Length: 259
Image (spheres, rainbow, N blue to C red):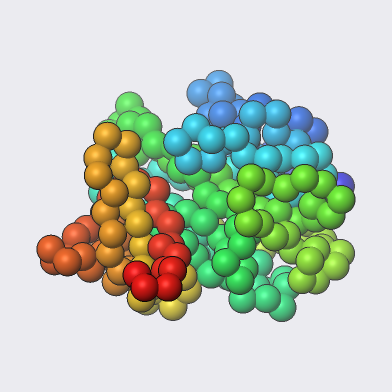
């Protein structure tokens, strides 16, 4: 079971900053309410989420005790429009924390998926709000599939850490993830995405791949992944030239014979 005192001690943080709850609607939503109430908690974990959220309001599967569901609050001086690469930075911190605990290579799929061998392992969700002092208050949520054996997983190709490493100490993983997030978000606050861009590109699973970009109400965009720009936008090479994508759903295009 998750233990907030063990996690706080391993992460080098004071008790009270971290909270573990048995069940919440979502860790992002619950942490936002804690912050609005003036509570000192900055990092919130839960054993179970009844309404875990992915991108575009999708449900995030959060079976009790089988994953790591964590949210962290941070404040940035930049306005929300300049924080487009925040989820990429959080994803990088998560990938590196996982690799420090498990002998596995974690790839990153723009903008916020963690993958192993093309299968989804986890993801990031960032909620932004402008504070009273003009700063941007962010809540960065990360969900990682730890041990889904015997369960029906997400409705897409997926994997979990147990498939690659057996038993996982979630407290150690949580502490490592918290330390990594604090370190990388501080760098991001000081220098933006440039501080981590090269490391992110080294994990980019879409680079050089044939892609389809899907945006509601618009024609699909076909192209080839060409990395990310300085602000975290996806660069796509198309027949009409280079495009920078800030939002939308991206999937790899499966070529069939003769196409």
